[in-house]
Length: 397
Ligand code: FEO
Image 1 (cartoon, rainbow, N blue to C red):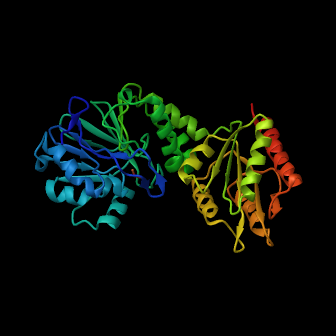
Image 2: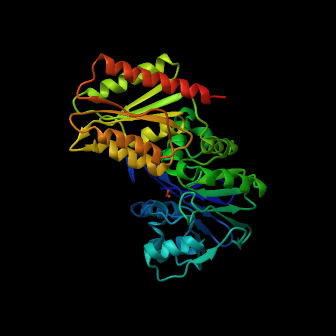
Image 3: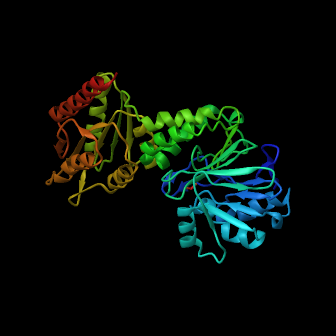
């Protein structure tokens, strides 16, 4: 295991998790990396650690360039366990003279690790001398945890951004220009939709703040995926675009089905949308994953949700995806509900209430079918699709 040099004094000493397929409910079909960075300044400094079980990999990479006991400073940019999980062991082995985190980071690390060592708080604008270079800090509250922080290495002109600007992509190619853009565009979008989306207003404000600070880093080094060296502004621009959530002429239909009735309704709605000139993405929760659904919803203009009724409830898979989406707070959507039932249609109506609770502009009462939809009911579904298309067209610039 070797450290990889990324600039004169900075080395990547992270770990690659090739086989991770679930990151707290987010399907990471291409794995991930836990990036940690070693600065060989006069006071050797480690930025972040890795998931606990990957500590031996990080340690071996450090050992390839430096005796870990020579590390004097550890900076913890974020107290989530994929970055802080190995901190306790790292401090025990390295015995640094100082460990730094944001004030919220100190609080969260203490609650997680119950450390016997001191963690010193730093705030936006604080600087620490690492011998030959200086770190300054930018707090990034709620991007995506209250403790999140960025660290800027001034002379090397590298911004270490932790989760921000990262993606879940296991790759042995360490830089943006070495990775397939088609793949990373998908993964960057998916990561934003599944991790950062609820904080989009904060992202917009934060990007403005960073611009005002006049930072123009030659590299952006996040803790997941690869390092942005060729064109760091690319991911910054993408974040601004993602955060804006401008509605598009695309509708996402999310549903589950019991005996095929809700499936028939979903297909008829899709037909109506297509006839109205709207792009359609259709997800049956029998076959699809919640994290792919929210990725499409983020770039859409409409969300249609459908469910059969089981034991006077909506289908469990629909409850799952709706709970997930509600938490991620997609914006600027119109929507409607549909579904089939046998003797109690109220749960289908509850889907409309869920849309309203999500801040989605409901354009029609729920279309409900008692058992199997007949031709007239399927026409009603088709009309719903056309209505959504028409409403979307009115919203388009
Ligand atoms: Fe990559 Fe919020 O942890």
